[in-house]
Amino acid sequence: MRRAGAVILSARLASHVALEAHSSGEIVTHFRGHSVGLGKFSARTADRAQELRAGLPLSPRAATMDKELHLLIRRLAAHGLTEYRLGRPRNGEDLVVIEPQVSDYWPRIITIRDTDVLVLSRFAYLRRRGSEMVLESPRARALFKICNPKIAAALAVLSTPQQIRQLRRQDTIPEIELLALLVDCEILFKLKTDRDSGLRRTEGDNNLVLWDFHDLLFHARSTEGRHANPLGGVYPYARTISAPPAVRPSWPGKKIPLCKFSALQPETMSPFARLLRQRHSTRNFDDQRPITLGELSRFLDGTAPILSELTTKLEFGEDSPSNTYAHRPYPSAGACYELELYLAVDKCEGLARGFYHYEAREHALVPIEVRSNQFEAVLMRAAFAMGVPAAPQILITIAARFARISWKYSAIAYELILKDVGVLMQTFYLMATDMGLGGCAIGIVNIDLFAKMTGIELHIEGPVGQFAIGRGIKLETPPPSL
Image (tube, rainbow, N blue to C red):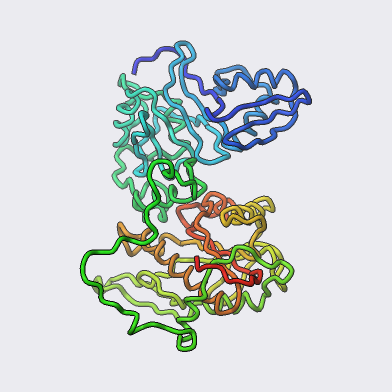
């Protein structure tokens, strides 16, 4: 690509964000009906902050940025309110616009040497978004809006390993700064040699080898923590089409009534049938009478302990590898039992407030040290997801050891994990109901926050569901089953 001046990396406010400077020196940001105070700054910084609408240079080639202004930009970035422009100031051309997908993303132009060999990640993809083209990956902490179509064509060359020295001899090489930003986001990665043919094994660790593209994309984009798209019950099409009917219209044909064969009266119902009818979601808990450690122990012992273990050889011949199965009370795809339980305990009589892992083999809890702000965040996010002001007494995060199931299954691994989560949640509901406790399944969980709390990379072990449990507030009229 022909060069037309120096390339500069700049930070600028996202289009939906506004800044307001008060006479006290306080700078407040407004976005989507929310306001966040960023702290007190000098009048000079408040004036320069208005330049963030167009962009302020971050490139090492630019003059050293004022420390106070840099602090303001970092605080904006921490809330996910900035985007970054890589372009040429001389002609005002944007090459790419970088949109953070996590709140603490900060662009880094890492060192790229002539001897480095780069190739596109197998998780990277280019797609149309409205009238734009965006380059992204479920592993990346930011996506790249491609402003110059020649860049997309130039990046296609990197579908095969390319040495930087050889790329420099071509007119179509993308800017080195862009390549460095893409390596930092794991959209590109470095190889030891351009003759490396084992790209799947070369990119990341053995756990990443087991992921198919569509599964990792589904995991990263279907929950919170690794994308900036609207999420949850926002009714995106409420003004476009009417709500689908609650009950499907009947098929034509003569109906065969079944009620005379199975009509159940409360006095004739089996205990299990009664339990199914009584099951419902409980979102408010009685914090004056919290769940006890004994009740928690019985709940976990009834739903999730390892009951038996069996090791067998696969039917691949005499040198077949073996696999061990650890059976639990609920069914699991292929008996893989890939799900793990992590407990954020807010209130439990007999158990200290904190974060725990449930050791299913020993039926024991192991405390995990986490930062207090992360612990509070996971509880408050759960309360927000349930639409209530107070945190649940105990929040169970269901995490998956992804390799456990993808070692066996191809193309359907993540689908099977989500089915297992549904089975386990129903098991939780029935056990809680049987014990006279309240429970509520939660569909949104932050995969990035969990990774920070546990120190486990999101492709190795990550959350796939949550369940709140505690002693529910007694209601005169039982709520409908939800």
